[in-house]
Image (cartoon, rainbow, N blue to C red; front, side):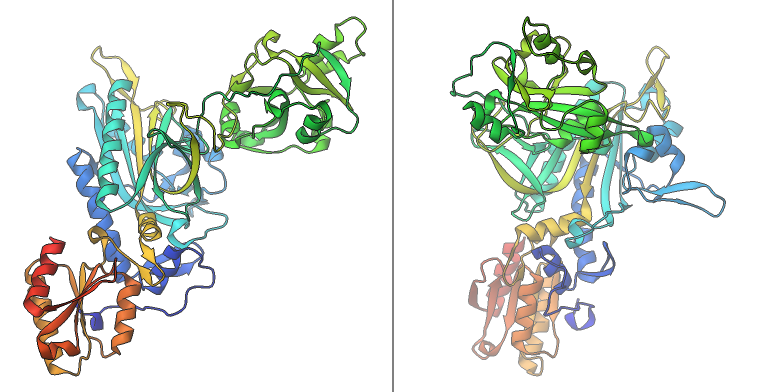
Length: 587
């Protein structure tokens, strides 16, 4: 291919809204063009990279026994209603009607469609296991699309779905897909981590994310310095925190604390470490069809509520802040909320201040962080203005709901090895889920087992952000001059740059080198444009071809330059030696 014949509109200036290197260099390098908010055209260079990424994904999946299909971009809304996701997915799901009033959605993911396909054609355990995938267009109506391909509305995704007779076989396939994904991202030259993750709107019993490490990543990853443990901040676990701070000793009672409404003020008031304070976070949980309830989440005072964990704990679509009016309407006192069953214990004590019986039966749900299990010598809100409870012993309370609610913090101890945990940033490029029967049961997708009994498929699902990978690669492979593409996904493996196209000797030598590289199987571009030499070199650095052979003034001495884009090292070599070394390096 010749540069002069290709549509490669390189730009000097970055888009005004571009802040990430990937967004800047994909636009400036002529890979993509924005046509609407969060929607991009792929120009010839971008399409070449996209195809190379797709080829790697397809080769590894096919080698693992997966089979490629292609499903419709438009999905009947009825399938989403049956699965229970039509309301739960939220505003990002684009809903519309056709001219006959039939309801559809633009698929951001295709669990429902793939289950329906299996339901039609797989009826016996003898046809299992089965792993089907597609690499297809998706749409997610992002409220604030940004960062180019990193968070667009329209995107290309590989989504795969496996069907099994039992959980054991599904886990086998889940592990196979993890190994396959590792091969895919390694072939692309990416530095990545596999992390434990939250399943989100997809649902299921467990999931792992594949995170490309990059300072510009939107996701915070918790990693252990002593072992391979890694998890998304939304799913990260830790060993139960301990403290050397002295516990406050007091009999169970109410204590007058005028104007003390924060953990910081309470800690100073009692001269007590926040570890021994109960933090109460009130949220309004939103469920399907607009149903809501007030939920109180309880943690130790030095912990922070992880809202994704909290939403999952109560099965909510989302959590929003509860207003003071909403809290007061259910009998709560903002600033002094606490585990309400403690009020009865205090009020039952001889000589204790009076309490209101109805406050021991508030119509609110209470969920406790597992770090509070059997906690003693605690101080918490009394659900009465200007009062806290001291000497609280949570171990005597019955039927409390405990789960992991706290956000893992830097310096916490690893749940696996006890090592120190720290934060890093990552870009999610893949996500695999153990779905179980999350979709097969509501959609009525069953098979007949060995005994002729109908059973729901046990499923796994496996996604890769194919178009997002272009951005992820650049975020990890760039410098101040432009992109630096790894060989496996580069738009061209090398470019032959003719310094002065009007010089016949340079032109002919450039053509000869170009033909020799083509014959050797190198994916090569010939820069034969009638542009200044400096302009061509800047385009080489901006676009990020891995290698260049520069045919310039030194040709008079039989020499050309072999340039490495990664290091920008330049070596003067005889023509034949430059070609030989380039072919050997690439192959």
